[in-house]
Length: 406
Image (cartoon, rainbow, N blue to C red; front, top):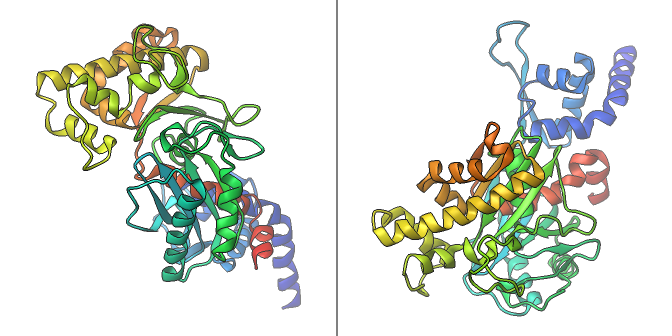
């Protein structure tokens, strides 16, 4: 008996360094069975079994001892899944038309969300206090362990300070120390784990790369317009490319119409003001109303009134501007996939051929074979991405991260 225990321990010791990679494989859906886990990690079946057992003991994954259906070769293997009652991360998002908190488990699963709010104060501490209070209430109701908290904001976030450089559409002061404020509010609410902050489109791209339309891409470009403005992000070999200080891919300030609308940055005709919800409403001759967000008004226009000539022409104008911007990015970045979110997703779905044709016509790589352009597939992908920030320390070192929080 002692020999068997010693052998099991030695297998686990050899596999401890594989705990993080193994958890990430299950987290991203790339290891649905123990056999796949064994192959992906490049370890023996016994070591993979010990690693899976340890992750199960930590309450992070579930190992179904009933064998999965046999494939074309090899024997059936045990199924692996994230634990359906395991820890969660607190995720928060602030945008021009409100804010929301959610609990997100491994696998990018949104466990619970609060109803959200529709008024954003010009005081970041007040707003973040409200969103953290909402998250704390969700945690109390769930009874789940919290590994940390992540916040998505519609602004470039400078590193390493964690300051929001240009929260224009929130009316927050430029350079607001959002990460520090968020971390203070998280601690004050008694929420365990570290707190992180990032740009909302960066985090949407991270979530889509791990769990959505960007899965499997090596060089993923994400461009999205949320409630106001346009943002972009690039994922290279599984990691966000944020530049030397977190400010890379500010695609909203690409000029796509030199004689176009004045932009907040001081230029004219930037993607930020030529291809966001307000731009669509304006191009379609509609006056924005106060009852729902600009994004919802623009989506409703495409969904219910696309047959209207003015709406179609307005949409085509935005599609052409967006296509010009994407073509320039394709020439510079040479991505293997583009995903579009927010209103851009709706524009793609309204006229996919037109957008793809503009990109192909205006880009060298598009002419040589085309770049897949897909719609983002996750609901609340910025929230899921904010949770990914909080999950990352656990993915890097499950034992160390959870022991530190115990």
